[in-house]
Each structure stands twice: as C-alpha cells, then as structure tokens.
Length: 129
Image 1 (cartoon, rainbow, N blue to C red):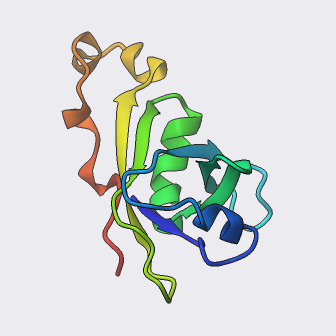
Image 2: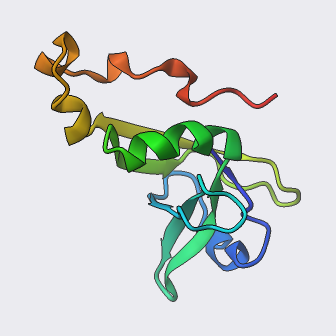
C-alpha cells in the first residue's frame, strides 16, 4: 500500500513520527468531501498522541474502502516500510496485513469453509502508473 500526502497540512505533524517499522492506524473517512473512499493513516507520536500521517493512495483506496465497509476484510496491521525522504513527496511503502472479515466468512460458498488470504484479488493494490 502507498502512503501519500504526508508533506501536506495537517499531516506534517504526523510525518515527524514516520520512520521505518513504525505501526500505523488506518481509519475510513466515508464523509470526506474530497474522496468518499478516503482512508486516513495515523501514527502515534508520544508527545502528541495520534496524528494524521497522510492517506492511502487514491487508486488503492478505491479498491480497499468498499471491502472494509462491507466487512469483507479487516486490517490486522499496517507498518511503514520505508522512511520519508529528506525532501520531496514520494509515496511511502506500507506493509498492510489483511484478514478476511466476518461478512466474507459468512458467505455460502466453498471459500467460506476455509477462507484464506490467497483468495483476495492481487489487483486490490494496483501499482502506480
């Protein structure tokens, strides 16, 4: 998953807490006026508490948000893989670990008997163009 917007306000405060290996929290913003699929990314900063670090890249949020909203997947963990560069606003890699949600496990098909992450579409996180 790609983290974007960490150089823009109000994410600048959260960007101070971005370092490789830091745990992140994802939070849906379905009423975001800019993007109905917005997924905010927050980081815990000892002196501030939870602070906005940015957002999931729009193309990935378009695929992930509906699955989260429907309870098909849940975020188990999100960990920053690469620290932000000293200058610039390149997207940052985030390792996102998902689990199948209750809604998926209750489906009456053969996958429901033994759900596994292998059934999640790889295209949920398209590469940047």
